[in-house]
Length: 287
Image (cartoon, rainbow, N blue to C red; front, side):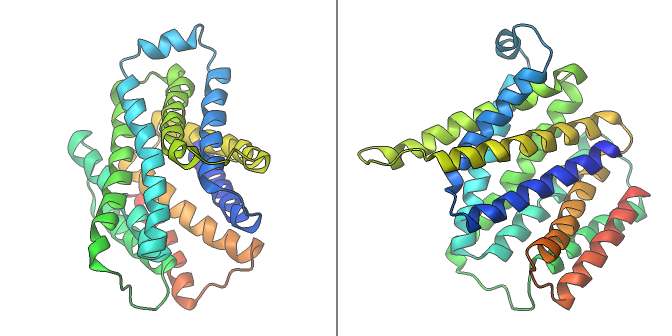
């Protein structure tokens, strides 16, 4: 349980840093690319495995790590596009509600237990995401961007499923750091490919400010995934419980952090969503 709580805490640190990116005019993509490089390097340095490069190149889980890494940065950039085209609220709901995909996957593939209390908790989790992430306004958007919402939803859910599958069947406990590092390095290389067109024929270059913020982001990013992996590995709860609890925990803590640190206003609707999220965590935990 401590691992899961630490995963939630460090995920919240990431969200706080993203908020500060906006305040200090940090280039998101540049900082994120550096972040993936730092997070990948941390895993290699702490893995304790001799010849880590050879280990990775011969690992059976390498294709999974590459695919997850690519999905990481692609989904992030789609989220950014979604925030611009259909709004932050809709993009956030699509991203967070994707938790139902790895939960259903766990029921079918891993044979996780199904109980009325757990199902009730998952339904409450979906409501919690909606009420915490939205205002009372009707969620209107241009229907030509429906594909974007679907891809955000499916992409995040697919990444979670692949991560869980690799953890269950391919990655040994002592390989956690190096597996996570490989994911981040794949995301880093994909990010470089994405950023090259922006620099071609221009005088644009990586700014020192973005590099420092990227380094600061890379540390909690690595720790988030590492502790999440350990919580899955611990067996204290089934993955169909861990995913929604992580999701709800992040939503509740980030909403409270925004309220306390950044003085963000929370409507009665948002407070209701936080209450529902806490009820969902309780139901899923004991389900």
